[in-house]
Length: 280
Image 1: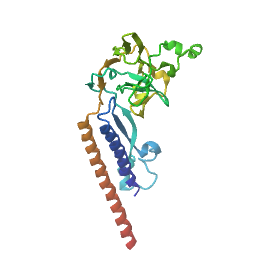
Image 2 (image 1 turned 90 degrees about the horizontal axis):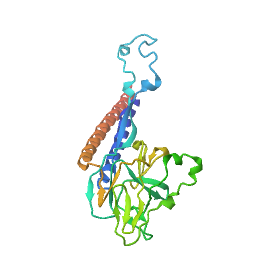
Image 3 (image 1 turned 30 degrees about the vertical axis):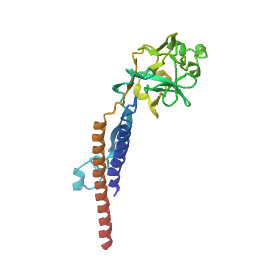
């Protein structure tokens, strides 16, 4: 009963879908969260094994030779991959001067123990060293004031400031104002500019947990002509529609149960065949 692997592959795919939707629902109230979605594909045996002699068998014809399925009876379901939907989330007013919401495709550049990462989670605060940090304690970086052309020149690479030297610090007990372009102002003037970056291909970003993203290619980062704006006193909510996701979760569960019934039917047929053949 090799055909039992066909519904089993569908069940595995549906289980992945359930897990993805459940994670979306669990983060419906997470600041700056972007929901994920799976893409499925059908795997046809004929595509990998070829269709040679499938229409003209070199043997005596039988009735079955006139009903060619092209291997469709062995079609498997596979998860082709997942992608993140980067739609804008709704703004939530907080009146906290250290809360920011990004409008546009940009991300904040932050320093983590694993290196530089990118996030849209804007509930910021100050640590004991007066450094601006995220709610996870990751340090917010200031903009890299280097022309993109210079970053590609070997002679200029050594002059680029290290991430540790770009951590944003503000004077204690100062009233902060953050402009739309990310400039951080106090009564004494500007103390730095938030590092806002955009990407040539947002779908190349990989999630790393804690609303952090990693780009596998540095050339994907855009540091000039940034159109993203910073909105002080707001937070960007998740772009997950909880009602819509719950509806999809119910559908996925029903599909999973339907496939389970098909597997049980195959198992029952296999059991009967073994028992009946044993009687002869």
